[in-house]
Amino acid sequence: MGLENQIRADMNNALKTGQKEKLSTLRTALAQIKDERIKKKSDLSDEDVISVLMRAVKSRKDSVEMYSQGGRQDLVDKETAEIEILQSYLPEQMSEDEIKKVISEIVKSSGASDIKDIGKVMGPAMAKLKGKADGKLVQQIARSLLSS
Image (cartoon, rainbow, N blue to C red):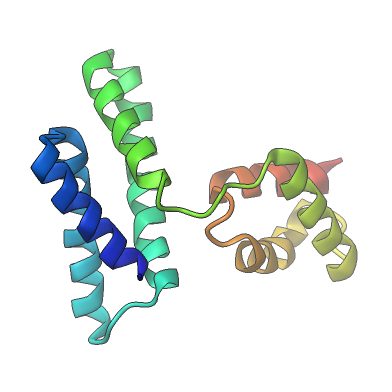
């Protein structure tokens, strides 16, 4: 069963069991997946669906940051719960140590020596870590390795 079909089945189950928050989150995710399918004008692979879900998680993380600065704990809790629901459909995220190891190898193989070479590192790193690590974290680690 494809990832999109799994999300649809879980949405129907949430509808039947009265899980309003999960239902709402999955409906929104399926709408975003449908938009992506229309934009691409073809069916989506599981990788495409993962990309849509990653964007949704990133958007919610940004919202959590803004809501916490604004003192809206109720909205922070809501967004955090939605992040957890969406992350259950994403591949297991790598730890910081695993990401450091991958980026260190890329730094060595690309010959990057200082912060000016971050472009040489970020392209291959994001290609290798796509769906497995948050882009912001990858960039922070790459910057710290190149500046030391």
